[in-house]
Structures are given as structure tokens and as C-alpha cells.
Image (cartoon, rainbow, N blue to C red):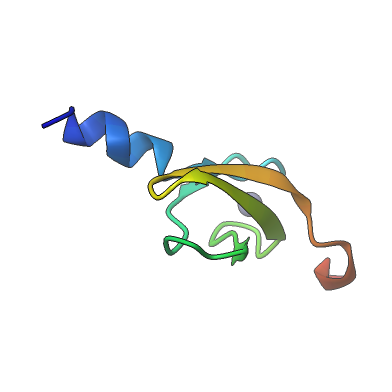
Length: 62
Ligand SMILES: [Zn+2]
């Protein structure tokens, strides 16, 4: 079995606004940062591998 910790690290994203690390639900298209409440669009390159594509512009807190 591959290294479970390495797999888990790939399933986390880092907020590009406040650099908080968090774990979106697998398959989630968007996720809200628990640190600053920014919403981010996500791309899943695998079932446990996720990247931030960019902010959800219409959900930016004002
Ligand atoms: Zn944040």
C-alpha cells in the first residue's frame, strides 16, 4: 500500500489568501477556507489529489 500520509497530504489544499491548509470533501468542486472564508474552485487530478484553480469571484466576502 502506498504511503498513506503522502496520499493525505495531496488531498489537502492551501488557501492562497491566508495560507491555511484544509481538506475539502473528495470530489467537491468548491471549498470554503476555514481561515478566511474565501471560496476556492478545485480541480481533482485523482480521487485524493486536489489543486486550487482559483477563487470563486462571485462569492468573495465584501
Ligand atoms: Zn484562507
